[in-house]
Amino acid sequence: MTFPRLHTWRRWKSGNLIETLVQRRDEIGNWVSERIIRNEYELLSRTKLRNLSVTKTTFYPPSFVRIGSLSTTDLDDLILTPDLFERLDLIYGRFEHSRSFPFFLQDRYLIDTSTPVLSETIDSLWTDNGNFVKNESYAYDSIYLKPISIVQTTSDGEMLEIKNEYAFSDAYKNEDPYKGMIKNNIVSPIIERQEYKKKFENVLLSTQKLSYKQFYPKVFKPSEFMISFESNPFYLKSKYSRYDSHGNPLCITSDDLTTIYLWGYSYQYPVAEIRNASWEQVESIIGDAEAFAAAEIPDGMLLARLRTELPSAQVTVYTYEPLVGITSSTDPRGHTTYYEYDDVGRLVRVKEGEKTTTLYKYHYRNE
Image 1 (cartoon, one colour):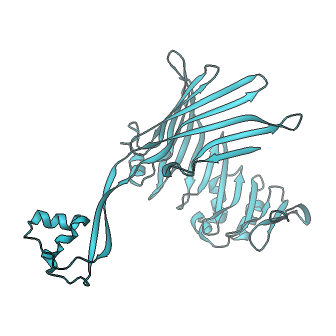
Image 2: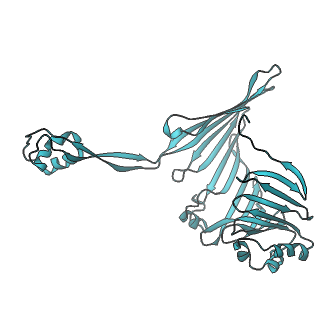
Image 3: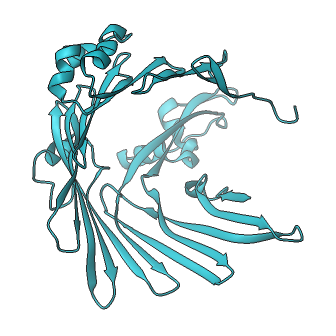
């Protein structure tokens, strides 16, 4: 059983997970703690903005109050300071006791733009062989507040550091397409990640690099994923060669296996997954991929032609009810699985052909 605990005080911490407790029952039925994860947070400051608060209220001044002439500086103080309301006789003249007038109270305050971030995680695990504790500490850049270093320390003395590079990092910020990513505020993707084993000096274990490319105006997507172990050269793990104008992947090659995806329902859902075929072969059947993806309902005849005209390809086809979910999937062997939903969009039945394989029933608590 897992018990999460959230911050309920100190406004900036509210809603952040501070502790997770995992328990199990022992042989005699008592709850025994198995694991506890604690999170610590800190506020990282960016800048503080000044703002002005104006409140309208009404005052009733006393009768026949008069103060001598005030300077311009005093007049400014009069507007900014509520306790000087008796000096208003200078502006409004002599007032009877029953007269009233509006008064605007002004107050300057600071808008704190600090952001709460996770600073440390302590993961404690109790086993038959003793306790095991893993500590993770986080360091962030000062502008975008992204984690640039994560240090993991274990109770058995192991220490691992992960270093992250982003589009705004010094190594990339002056290169294309990363300058364009920064301009469009696409700063979250990790471009490069290095893992070090910390001993007397850092020992590089691996480097992962996800290169980006601008495929369309304001469409920046991964183009290559490369891995290097220790100081060995990079090798290409995955290549993303095509996207549509909405940023949906069309052609991905991973470990020398190419998978092609076709989209539909106004670019919302993948409607076909094709393996062991080239993009040119697929495009010769469906025509323009953009027009195919833009259609509200995919052309089922074209999808059927993929199976008949590409006999060596493995084609999986999907259909959907927009805003509800998938309604069918047909695998490369031609077997179709159907999905049915109730009136509020919950999955209630899964069928293999005409045979129901799974039923889902929903109840309110205590029903």
